[in-house]
Length: 215
Ligand code: C5P
Image 1 (spheres, rainbow, N blue to C red):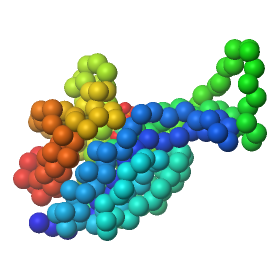
Image 2 (cartoon, rainbow, N blue to C red):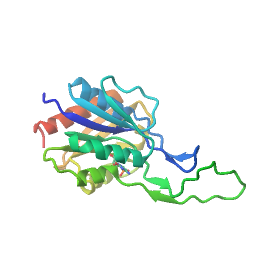
Image 3 (cartoon, rainbow, N blue to C red):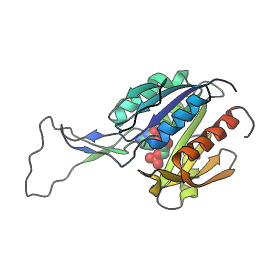
């Protein structure tokens, strides 16, 4: 099997509003870390850009730890040109507080309004900057309803090769189910199993796609 350079993002991002409070989500980072482990087992070179998680990264992985979506974007921009396969598994926060207060915001009994600004779409800007032919880009879509329809929309809007759709119950869980949607419209359903098994199957599909065994 050909040795490839994998770039994988994993975990949540944190968007701070003051030195102690932030907006984030419940992503554990498990799926990204397990895919990294599988890619390594198959002899690939792996760079993992990770938001804050409690996980131990697989040995022999180059790990870049980040906090915010902006940090992650900066690191992806640096690493993306060199990679053969980019897997955007991270649950990037879609919004960040418009203002960062240098001192801890004082508690009051008044209703407080926080203005949020959208973060930049790291995956979309990566595909837009793609110059190398044959580079494979994989996204994830965590959905609460119309899972396949919404995931397929992301596949086209973000010009992905593959999108992996999973239900919101996958978050923080040790188990997951998934529908792997290929650019040609084909859907491969992966039944509910431990994330380790799902990661192995996802890696196999990505490798077969990269080897031209499926299109
Ligand atoms: O948030 P959304 O459902 O659009 O996420 C779909 C894909 O886009 C995921 O692969 C995620 O890692 C990526 N994403 C990103 N930057 C964002 C939001 C999402 O790279 N700001």
